[in-house]
Image 1 (cartoon, rainbow, N blue to C red):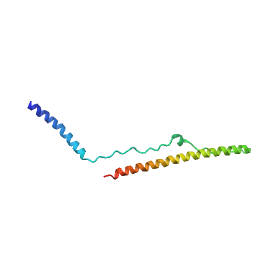
Image 2: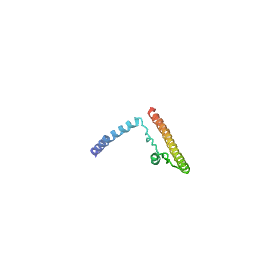
Image 3: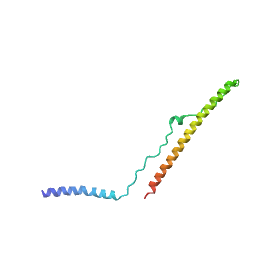
Length: 113
């Protein structure tokens, strides 16, 4: 019985000692914080795919009513194009701000000792 106990205690010690040493080693090491995911800048595919309409061409014999209609259609197209450009500018500004904040967090993690 004593022989069996010695055998099992030797087995336990041979298994337990490396685990204890590993846990002591890991506890003594400095922990590294988890870095958050990279910033994603989301602009809708529809917004990115949109294009501004070119001005309409007038025929040589266009009437005054046709000129006015063309002018109004071009103005509306220009207005819509401006809204698209404004939305893209806003998205880029938000993305730049988020990237700056992310970089500040990374710098703080890198400078922590």
